[in-house]
Amino acid sequence: MTEATHQYFIITEIESDESCLIDELPRPLDKKFWMATKGVRMGNEYTSGVRLKMSRDGGLGIPDYIPNTLLLPMVSDKLKSLLEKEAGVEIEFLPFSLYNHKGRVAAEACFIANVIGTHECVDATKTRGEKSIISPGQFEALSQLALDSAKVPSDAKLFRVNVFPRALIIRDDLRATLEREGITGIRYVAMGERYQLL
Image (cartoon, rainbow, N blue to C red; front, top):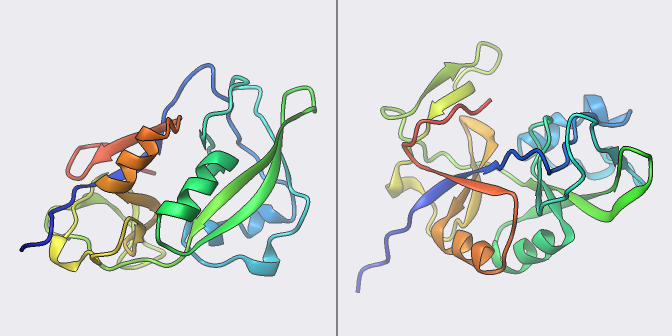
């Protein structure tokens, strides 16, 4: 019996006038948050009692996958619980409280979902984007991402790729679980679909 062939998607946020937007990190995190965009453990570098504020450029709604301009996967408590149960990957959940435009608590328990590590499984011949000058072998931006299916670990349901670690890749079965559970705020971009990732 042959193993089922899976499809993979890039996770992006759904832009909406109703949804909140986070565009600022409190000090001293602002110079260290890059760690969580690349799958590097923050550990003690992440302080307790972090409070993030909604930008006035966004709305007040809080989807499960929280829109932000910081290149960080931010999730609700509901999505955190699902990922802990279903993703089968090491994720460092960094807690924060979300405050609204008036400085009141809008959500007590939200998290940066730092998926640890990266995989070398990109098909370089079909991947397009702007290559990084600072980090050789990586991209600053992607317009098209393709995977080499032979190199994708068989147990990988949620992961990062080494050439563009701030993108999260999700497998079709985990996507189906999130959709079945009514997770909001996520758009799934198919491999090979043209989409600007910064």
